Structure formats: C-alpha cells, structure tokens
Image 1 (cartoon, rainbow, N blue to C red):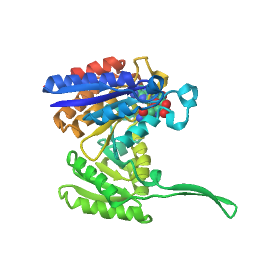
Image 2: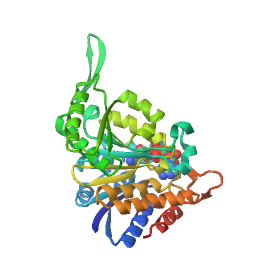
Image 3: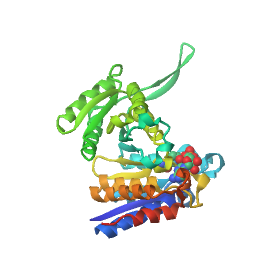
Image 4: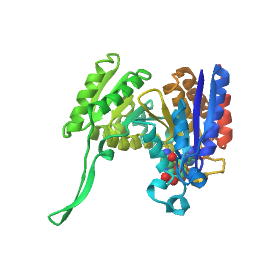
Length: 362
Ligand code: NAD
C-alpha cells in the first residue's frame, strides 16, 4: 500500500517523539511491503517563528491533500514564552483548533488501556483492576455546549450567563456510525452515554443512536447516564469497550479514563472526519520541561501511528504488530524515565524507538 502521511512534529518534545513513530512506521513498511511517504509541515510555535501564524493556509492544504496526519504536540512554556504575548488566535494551540476545524475532524477517539506491566501506576485498587481494561472513548468534537450560542448579560441588575447545547440528528448519526464501525474492529460493544433523564439533546441522542444500532445487529448497544458512567469507570472499567458520547461529557470522561491508566506518556488519540482521514497524536502536550533531553516517552505517539494504520489505512495486522512490539518491550523491562520502576532498565527516547522497531517482524 502507498500512503501519503503529513507529519507535524510541532514544538517541545514533538520532533523527538514523531521521529521515533516514523522509525517504527518505516520498519512496518519494510516488513509488510508498504510505502509511507512523509511530508513535514509546521504548526504551533515553530510556525509562528517562521511565518507569524500558528498554521498557514498552505500547511492546512498540504494536510488536506494527504491520507493522514501524524502530530507530535504544539505549545511552549505558557508563563515563559513570547508565543503567548500574542492574541489567543495567534498562539500555538490556535493551530490545533484551526486544523481540527479545517479538516472537519468531528470524531475523537481516546483509548485507555492498562498494561499489566504498568499496573502499579494505576491509581485503582488491584481488586478493581482485575484482569485490566481496554476501552476507547468516542467523543463528538465539533458540536454541543462548546460550540453553542453563549452570552452574558445583566438581568434586573444581576449578571446572567447562558450557554446552549445543540445537536442535530445528522451530527449524532455520523459519530454513532463511527462508534459502531470501531466496535466492529474491537469487541462489538457500544455503551452510549447521555443524560436522557434531563436533557432534550440527550433524548435525541439516544433515539438516533438506537436507529444507527439497527444497522449493526452484531454490535451490542447499551445506554448509561453520564453520572453513572463517571462512577463505573473507577468501579468497573473492565466492562467498557466503546464509550460513545457527546462533546462535554466526552471531554470529562476521556480525562478520567486516561488518568486511571496512570501513564500520560502511553496514551494515544485520533481525530477522524466522515471518511477514513484522520489526525493522530499523543494525548499529552509538548512537555517543554523535558524537550531536547532524549527522555520523553515516545510510546503514545508510536501507538497513535498504530491507530493511523488501523483507522485510516485498514492495516489492522500492521497496527497490531506495533501494539505487540510495545507490549514485548515493556515485558522485557525497558522503560523511559516517566514509567521507570524498580528492577527495570531505563532508556531514552531514541533507544525506546529502536527497541520497538526491532520487535516488528514476521
Ligand atoms: P504536558 O502533557 O506537555 O506535560 C505534563 C507533564 O507530563 C510534564 O511534566 C511533562 O514533562 C510530562 N510528559 C508529557 N508527555 C510526556 C512524555 N511523552 N514522556 C514523559 N513525560 C511526559 O502538559 P502541559 O505541561 O500542561 O503543557 C505543555 C504545553 O503543551 C503547553 O503549551 C500546552 O498548551 C501544550 N499542549 C499541547 C497539546 C497538543 O498539542 N495536543 C495538548 C496539551 C497541551
């Protein structure tokens, strides 16, 4: 397969971790006979330095013409960088919002997977962890409360603020279809999370999700109220496969789900459009405090590259090969400093990439 990948190393540790993800992708290409063609573009602080804006029209267009985007992270040290003297829409993170909007990336997927080897980092008790957990949060990213009309005004001498939560059935349908499609690549189970006992938008959400489910008789659908879901995630995370939810609920639940894995350097993510196109990035930021020291954990970015193979290119076997390689390296006791534990062997960013690439073979 021939794939055109736009890489956006970005700022801070971004270039170091994207380099390792490409190293692993190159090994996949070599072993499985694919060609990955990379085009690098600037976004974030480095683009501000070069062009005065966090994302140029040309960079966005280059991304649009590709098959998928692999992003490191953008942003600098907020309290100590000239990038933050500018207006909000000219700061590094504005590039992220612009590219998500420009590429119509409405579906955000964040997996939360507990590696047996890292179970000590999980804040949950051992009896709750049980055999571990492996779930994804499918969050709607471009609608709902964060994009609704809002205003603050004075009513009878008292300040009053209003935010509105709007979803139409098409917005719900397209994210539900994504969730069911992804469930078919996993364990065929969707739990749709809403607040249908209170909100009209949630009642419409539930109705449309049930309609979509009719086209997926092989996928089990359950509904869960968001407050219950927040509890269930820390009481019995093993019950979840795909959690489908709207923007604000997903924002909160995906952070909760990632925290129960205990390791920020391990968490991948994907944002998809209506088709196969997606942008893949680690869940963490640009970590300026450790940039350029060869100590960042590249695994979240490497696992994001695996998601790219699975969701944008349908290369499921190759994606799994990366995931298995990560697992083997952890089982052998190799660790970057953020996940270091007694009795393990500490390695830097580049060495971790080498070790994972070396574990990809037929
Ligand atoms: P952060 O995720 O960059 O760092 C939080 C802590 O985790 C730091 O101590 C950091 O050293 C550590 N860390 C993060 N990734 C790591 C890795 N791969 N290996 C080892 N340790 C890692 O969050 P922050 O410090 O709040 O933000 C730093 C910058 O990143 C800010 O400018 C912020 O706006 C930006 N940011 C960007 C994105 C993105 O590009 N998608 C997301 C979040 C934050």
